[in-house]
Length: 320
Length: 228
Image (cartoon, rainbow over all chains, first blue to last red; front, side, top):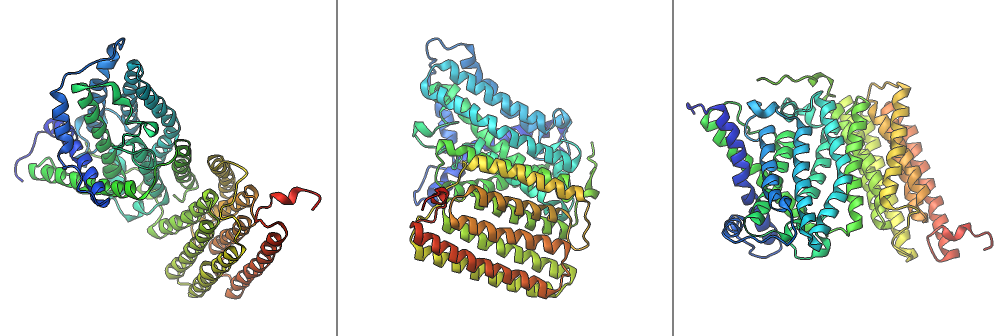
């Protein structure tokens, strides 16, 4: 416990933790999902093997695809790894770059990644890739108000829009946890995460049915290392969203409060444990609901919107 | 860099927070009723909503030390969460008509309309500046929103059962409001309200049966034709 880690090293460690643990979390979810269906399922480490395998393959670009097609996987991956610098991944105190951007800034970086991936899919000229990106943008436009209202709730609760402050507020006592605004905003955020990570009420995560695809259709035309980066990026995005949900909203405990080596190692283990917990819940939801028809997704989003609107209302009336 | 907690003082206490959360749950169940297509599921949601209102009564009774409210909680649970849903479900089973009602609007637009209506309720009650020493005032706004959405439910649905359920859940909103403004209301009055509800159940039961016998359907769409 005696050794104190240098702060920039912890900052780098936040990014590394997210990057390295993300495929594993996807693997655990796939495994749990399969076990619940009575199948043996893929190995937990399978996503890592897939990524390594794809990195060793040659990559082809469709004829006529511009530079964006090859740039997009790298750019979006970089975006997903920028966000862990802004949010509390391992420490409960803000690291030097933690104030570089607020919760809106993180949202913008995630939106940029999604935009880049969508424009690469458009350049590819492939039918399914284009269909996926057009759907992702259409439904993205209607989930955006929900995200904004969740941010407004955070802002009204803490009078800032820094994720570290909300985490500290939630830690400060039970009265901050049972308030309806917090519970409603967390629930709305969870529904948005289900949408953003392409989980079951919205789309099947590992299916091969192209008609229902949204997020999964976008990397269709990429191959080799580019495909690997897109896949790795989407699992990193999933873990980033889980981390925001866990360490800012529902369970900001178990974070390191000192730069000590032991505390940080413990925080890494706690984070992976909590993310697996959320993943198991997601897997259970995946197995217990049917996929919504495409045009029913608006109803799903309307439910999330309702939760976030009521959160803001109760806050405005002074009782939230 | 340290983080200062700017607003830890404006949070409600644990009791207020819990009470508000339970009241919010009543409102959310009202919204779910609006979304549900199956009549059976709607009646079950009504039973659950009544259960939540009874829980709130018990919470208030425990925290504010008003023993009569325990009686009210038990009686309203027995009536509204068990008896009324059982009667309505039985009538549904006997009528063997369609199992799903139809709305005049799509689900997403229904929800949007109700959000607007609920916002109206929220802010009008907020502007009234009412104070209660039993429950936080936001519960009153929530109760008002429940009542208004029950109206929306009755307006947009085109079958007798949904309209009856809308009316019953309106009563749930009213009892939520009475918990806020008049928790010390004499028990006999509260129980009188419940008997009022029973009368409504009988009236709606007769209405449902007569309507079903005349038109072989629970839908009210045939009622807007002038000649029978």
